Image (tube, rainbow, N blue to C red; front, side):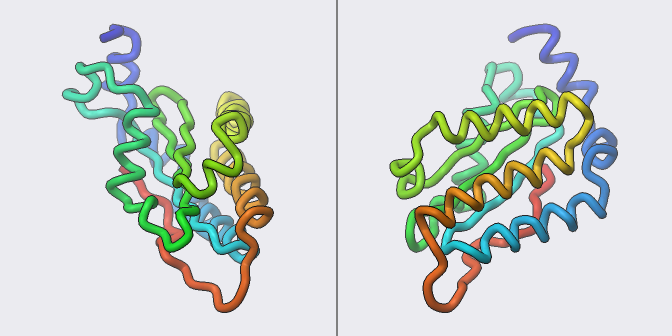
Length: 165
């Protein structure tokens, strides 16, 4: 366990979460998800966690490992066409991870998700949290629309509301 990372996690609380993602930002993110999903049959979830709890932090859990846990807990994998995508932000580390279900991941690969994460993290370094998240959502939405265009009646399988952890 790295001491610097531990201090960052202990110092990053719910106040930081609310400062970077006030109510208006969360509503704008929810609208961005709804808009991105209009052109596709894919599903997008956004989850932000202020810091890891002591036990996973002590065990050295990475943001990627935590994102996979959250992907499972939020049942993003449980979409009809295996095209759910989770955008996960671990605020204390300022680390974005995208976990995609096997259907869409097989079409795009990890390099596409990494590029989106890097763009979002660049916006965060400039203090643009809401804009960074919305840009990431729009990018994911464009990829989903390309590979899973909307046909027939739209069914929203997962909530568009951001998840605060």
